[in-house]
Image (tube, rainbow, N blue to C red):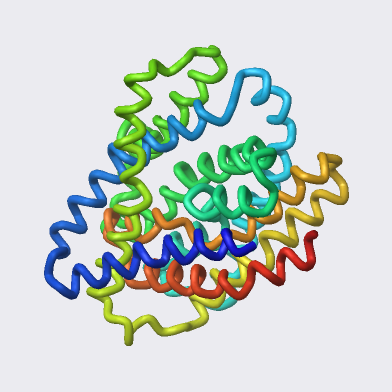
Length: 313
């Protein structure tokens, strides 16, 4: 349990460092834009490729993939509920796509993987990655489309539908990195040692740069402006109450190993994806709202995780 807390605190410390370095004028909005481009086009796709190829074999993937039905159904249900919440509580139009995405998708790797390792050990990794596969696919298809639609210019242009530009947006570099890694595993190929070292250096940039970007955003928004409101409360309800409840409920009807269900519940109750503020910034959405929701979800998680584990274990 202590190591899980330390992992979260270290991630939060990276965000604070990004905030502090922006205050010291080492970082700026322009540097934040460069970091965003570097993460989304190079570091994150590389990280996804390595995560898949390092933690799965062909046989492991085929043996476990049937369990993906629970995260898939649960996330589709959660996404549907998010839009009911949007209509009932009149979420600000420029936030609706990012709200639905944060309500539905969790931080399955940067926080989820170390937390599950701390709780269950190495035996949890394949189950962590099953949830990650579903979460990643939904996030980089439905989620990224919803975030892009928060930009009013994109909303106005949606009547001029062109298949190839839309397809290009769906098959983002991150999803391509994930897809290539999956094909690599299914073909039972080995990553050359020298190439893996090079890719590891690039992939390791993902977490620190992502948290630096969030620190830059939070600084430019201003700590005093990180106020709680119904739009953020809705995200927290989706992340920490509805998502794990839906996964647990499905586990009562769909038979899977106990460890798999426990890992899925923990994964479903993770904080907001740390890529959301970066993507919101990239697509011209409400980045202040996304950064606030992420910050509150990480802060609340410190108090939430002991309660979840007490109920689960």
